[in-house]
Amino acid sequence: MIRLLALLLIASPAVAAPKIDVLNVKPDAAKPEVELTISVTKSGGNCDVRVDFGDGKGRTIDFGLATTRTMHYTYAKGGSYKVTAKGTGKSPCAAEKEAAVKVAGPAEKKAEKKKADKKSASKKKEAPK
Image (tube, rainbow, N blue to C red):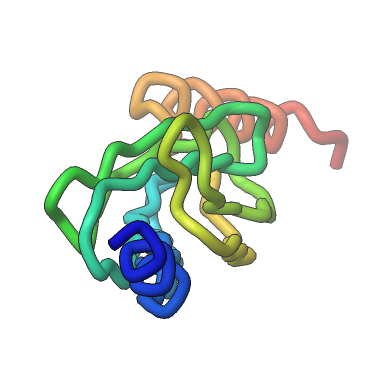
């Protein structure tokens, strides 16, 4: 009986860890906000993913029963960043994905814009003839 159980355990295929399949990053052309969508192929079980936004900040996602998670993130300043998603924690998802993203700078406040416009206009008046 023990031999039969041992043989069954050896012959049965291992359940694969959930795997990160897709990391999709959609920047908003007018704001420093991005929408990230991460998809995982699962044959059962839970897994965790750590998303690093490329600016020194990150977030851990527990997939639970889901196969896709979507989140929004706002960068402090515009620029080019490398976003990575990789397994983490006690039940990490397999694989690692990365995506490059270019984001716009923060929206200029109206008061600051008016002040800059006034300053620019006064410099034009002061220009020598």
